[in-house]
Image (cartoon, rainbow, N blue to C red):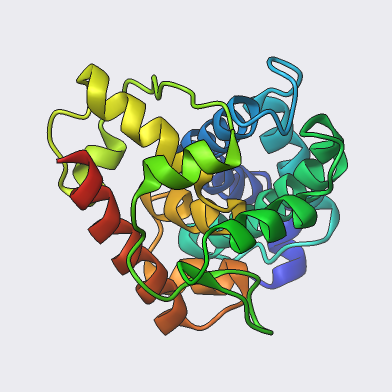
Length: 230
């Protein structure tokens, strides 16, 4: 069957649509967590945005931009993540005035200044870790940012980072501090890995950066989570 015939074949289109729907399973968890972090750090107002609305918009854009009817589920998943990830970046930039009326870029620059050498900026990606994070509570108090208590119920972070007892009050508090203080573009990579269930290669494709950079960011993030939450 030629491509044109496939596009007009109801069964073929139905099968393609099923692959699109199946690709949203982990996308839903990822978007919900990004919105939760953005709400908790006051980048966006609480309950203003819903994960299913953002995903629906991403799916609409996916179809509108044209697609390969023969694409496999993995390729579809990556493309949907690309679209939604870009949409979330734009949303957080647009709504960043809620956080002290500063742009997201300004917020991250301030964080970088306050962290000394914990993060470094480069031409390919705004922020990368260059050494282990140290004394989170000190930096958090110094920045005078509100600390939220992490209340996500699933075990995604425990499983990905091999951390136990994350449900304890102390560890929920520490994890909240970590996410409050972590630059958005770094926590985004963490969430693509933890909640999006994506490989290093997939994340590198979505963020348009080198695989080794993704590996290094996640390696240091995992080390630091373990150090402060165990």
